[in-house]
Image: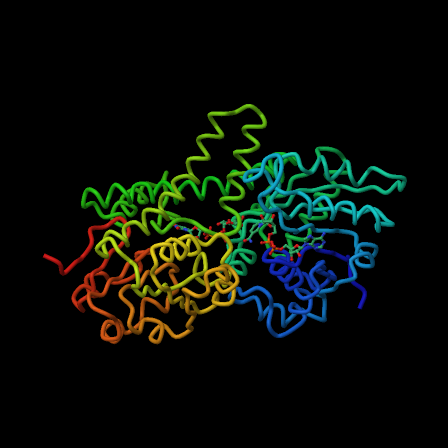
Length: 459
Ligand code: NAD
Ligand code: UGA
């Protein structure tokens, strides 16, 4: 079949894979190829067991793979054959040298730029899909235009706003698609080509075009604002626990103000995931770099409250269980950083598991999708941990349950049966406020929600 365009994506991770699957699904006229240096990942994308779990992803990969969606390892060949290249490689926090712990590690990004320059034989549009410090596209342009080849490259910024667990829904129905370009004739022409792709399924009024720098900065700012809401509600949850106010009632009351809005106000054990902390620290680093100390400190506070919330949750557990966890068995319900994903990057569960083990507790972890990742994350502590898929087996002989991920299945378990299986007194720490606390109390549990008075049977 003759395709209208050859589109390539470098980086077959949580963003590259699902995003390209959606473009392939919505645009049968384009040939989409996704490449990665990790051959195992490409093998998995070509298999029945995809490397990323997302509701609905498998179905659209099944419909497109081998027709107009391809996963490949021959990066030079794919670069030569493509007209449009998305770059969706990882941009983690630097853990060495200048800016360690804050700045973005741009080594994967830079290598990709050099690889494109090396193998390109015709003009290309190169699109930043990864989240990057504002003004990174300038570096990309400089790398691509250096050297002897005289090939025209146009760099666009097209940050991704999908959230894990709802990636397919978000991609199919985005709040907006953001495209930043140079404000030049060639910049506008390139931008139009990208608009044309998205316009196959996204209404035109939702496709927002800006200059390059606004686009890059908007992605960092959006993540900082989202994380800030969680830290704000978590900070208030600490005050609720001191004052008998109820955080869910407070969230409803403030969320009904249309200027505030009701979403993203769920108190929790703290936010996790690969991006919020990394992107805020990146923003903090940029602010310091530009001499904006006060602005840097403001955003740093969002991460500080998040650390505080995780610490507070484990301290509450310790206090509630008579100030000793030594030799006790604690079952963690959920390990993924949120429901409907197997991803455990930066999940608060890692911190909580480590702290509980530091107090000499024994941990049993159960999670519908994240047990393999949990084993990798906690490999160094394996002698203190057991992993069990079945929650009823996992709770056997446990003193406490800590609910850490808001998986739906935890709402509908038979808690009477669970209570019978546990050591007495039995505790439940609901780190997501998703359970029916008064019902659990009636069964006999001592229940500790977030930001609400506890329900205990002790006099
Ligand atoms: P990921 O680690 O899942 O995937 C990145 C992939 O890039 C890896 O498979 C890696 O092997 C590959 N890669 C690295 N260097 C390469 C190279 N030189 N050539 C070819 N492949 C290379 O990361 P991710 O979660 O998909 O995130 C990618 C980017 O998207 C990051 O900048 C992230 O901040 C941003 N982002 C992520 C999400 C999310 O939900 N995970 C959402 C929006 C934006
Ligand atoms: C987040 C953003 O929502 C996406 O828009 C963005 O594209 C993405 O980061 C990114 O750049 O990587 P994600 O981290 O996948 O997406 O998931 P979220 O739904 O944002 O949840 C992040 C964390 O916050 C989770 O640990 C979640 O449990 C927690 N959270 C979320 C709360 O504690 N309370 C809330 O009200 C909402």
